[in-house]
Length: 128
Image 1 (cartoon, one colour):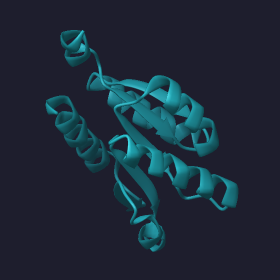
Image 2 (cartoon, rainbow, N blue to C red; image 1 turned 180 degrees about the vertical axis):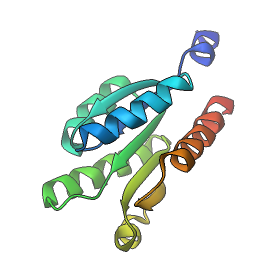
Image 3 (cartoon, rainbow, N blue to C red; image 1 turned 135 degrees about the vertical axis):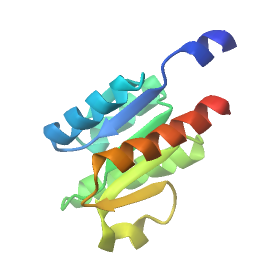
Image 4 (cartoon, rainbow, N blue to C red; image 1 turned 90 degrees about the vertical axis):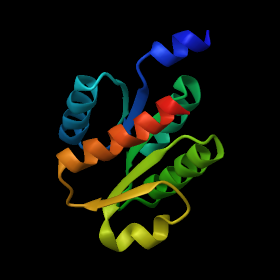
């Protein structure tokens, strides 16, 4: 069972309102052998996260909707509780509001460095 888990592709949950951003991340992550799951909004990600238990979460937290911000906070808190790495994507001015956990990547970001950061987190996860 443990051997199966080590050889299985790592699952990354991508949470972003932008279908284009999800597609770019999905394509890049699948190229490096990750399995991806997607949710458009943080509140939709919570049941998916509970059911699929991803190895890493990438969540865009740059939303004007307070409901989305609160759902993203709950998602980040749950990720921290379960020791699931989370990468939060948002405006630099929001960084201080997200100090409770996860890696914060300020927008605008370049996909290359973001994917390398995600790959490093996945490598750490695989080694653990």
